[in-house]
Length: 135
Image 1 (spheres, rainbow, N blue to C red):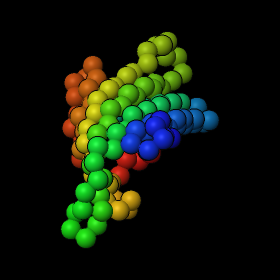
Image 2: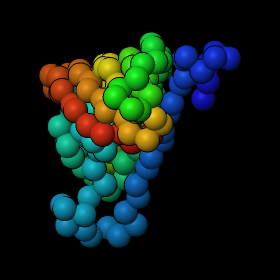
Image 3: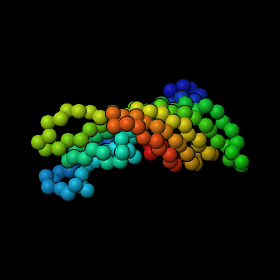
Image 4: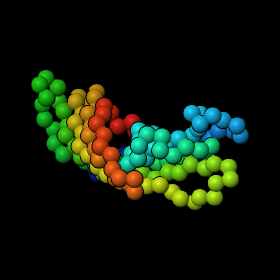
């Protein structure tokens, strides 16, 4: 969603939840968050349970436009904050897990977005490189 009229500053957010209604499930069927699925400062599938929820929010700034060969491109920077948690039967924890960080991106002709970022959490930090934002 644009924050400024010229679309140089936008805010993007996503909420996701996962509920397993069956009381008996295998560990690989668990509702998991972490890494590419939610909390970007943690390893993939860091937290698993019967129910999960997370939110990612990014503030993205389009720094400049340029030509990348024959394609127009945009260079930008972003900062983000993530939070989420999992629930499991007989687990009394009320802890919400958080991560924060930022990175750079290049969008070519509105078709492809290449991005690199670093997100930090109490488990340490995590560098990521990828195609697209995911939200």
